[in-house]
Length: 294
Image (tube, rainbow, N blue to C red; front, top):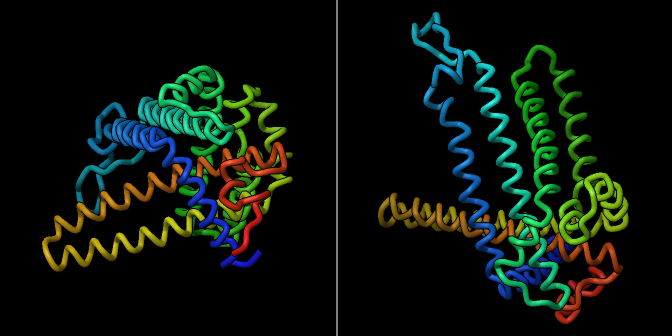
């Protein structure tokens, strides 16, 4: 599959996915709530370190500037950061679960409400909390490895090796967890069952999953670039503040659209992986078994 074919397929899939979002605008509300709660959690997570609170950070005197600088985190600071990182991961998993639940019902011919997705996510809250903590822990470990490796300049060869190994692990983790949320939320599978079956489903639909994600993300980046150019132009022609507002609002809307479209596409590909056919609403618009004329 060529580069432009991937973009074409991703574009068609994103349009069809957004048609689901258009039919169920509460999905965008889910994304908005997820974003607002994530920002609030990130703010609370980083506030003690930005404010350099004594209980959270260890300070030492810089010999060059003769000023106090952060030398590390205290045990309480590390516990605070870890707890809020886990909370952030659970929030993301919860709202993605609500999106998956609503979109799956729509793709199955139903007419879901805002409460349906939330109640469905709450019905799997034990799985969501466990999975949120697992995925959050893995994400935090990978983040620490990347940050530590980036600061290590003494051995470039080892630095490159660590980067390759972490990348391989991230790809393997993505393969095993791509269908985790649909399996947990739609079928109520356990964490272990979801990982095992999700890996098998991913192997059957490898190319389609990559193509959908690649196309949607590239399209999002393209429109993001246009928004940035527009914001710069308005800022230069009128006032910088107006340009900044346009840029922030525009990028925020694009992020909402991309997040919603990608999550809905996972629901569609989940149906495809389970049945061998795309949902009927996609077939009605010319998309059968992830094949179209591009």
